[in-house]
Each structure stands twice: as C-alpha cells, then as structure tokens.
Figure 1 (cartoon, rainbow, N blue to C red):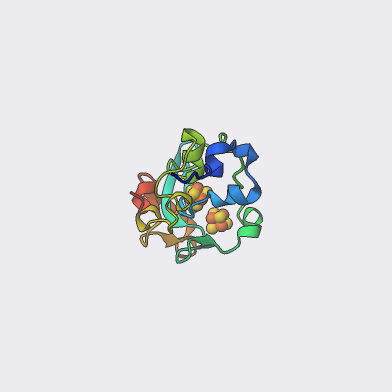
Figure 2 (cartoon, rainbow, N blue to C red):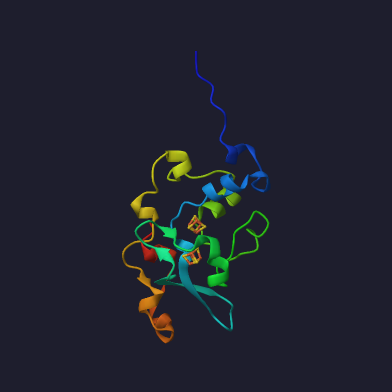
Length: 152
Ligand code: SF4
Ligand code: SF4
C-alpha cells in the first residue's frame, strides 16, 4: 500500500491565501534582492551591482534588521502577493518570482529539498558591502545580471 502525502501549501493555495508564516518561508534567502541597483534615468532600465546592502549578513544570508528594513532602507520593499506583479526588478530566480510565474517551487528550494539553499544559489563572496563602496563609485560595480554576483 502506498502512503498518501498531502500536497504542500504552495501547490494547493493561491499566493493570497498563504499564512504570513507560509509566505515568509518562500524566501530562499539567496540575497539577490539585497544587491544595490541603479536605474538609468532615460530608459528606466535597472542595472544590478555586486554591492550589497549594509544590513545583509553574508554569512547567515539573513537581513540583520529585518523588522525595520523598510524604514531603514526606503528602497527595500516588502513583497506581498498584491505587489509581486508590479515590482519589475525582482530577480528572475527569486523564489517568489518563480512560484508566481510557474505555480511551483524549484527542486533547489529548501521547502522542496528539505536542505539549506545550495551554495551556487546564494550571493557569493565576490559581493562587497555598500559600506566599502563610495556612492560615486557604484557605477564601477555594475554587473551584467544578478548571475554575476555568484548565482548560476
Ligand atoms: S530574491 Fe527573493 S528569494 Fe532571494 S532573498 Fe530576495 S525575496 Fe528572498
Ligand atoms: S534592509 Fe535587509 S532585506 Fe532590505 S535590502 Fe537591506 S539586507 Fe536586504
């Protein structure tokens, strides 16, 4: 006899039906959204840099000021099921973006694998803290896309 297992919440619920805890658990803590971005004044295009927010802890891959993040960093937006489609700069491989687009989470996601996020899915050691980069040098840190910050 085969044991029946319930489908996980992200396969059975709409994003808007997730509990706050379920919603938070979708974040894979890859760190991509904490990279500083520059916007072209004419085209509006967004460029990623390899410079990361001062509040990102590169060892734990967590925000050190999560509760206050949107106050301390006005450009740090709180993702919600309601605004997900409107934030055009969300990285392609952000777990929320993938779930929203495909209706499922990828194999590498901790909720699926039951393991920590693989190293090659995390921002790597090549990123530098914004504390070490003068604002007028940010353009020197533009990367082609977020993959260049260590993501495959
Ligand atoms: S890019 Fe998405 S999955 Fe990665 S840390 Fe940001 S919100 Fe979480
Ligand atoms: S405040 Fe925290 S969540 Fe927001 S960009 Fe900085 S490190 Fe990331």
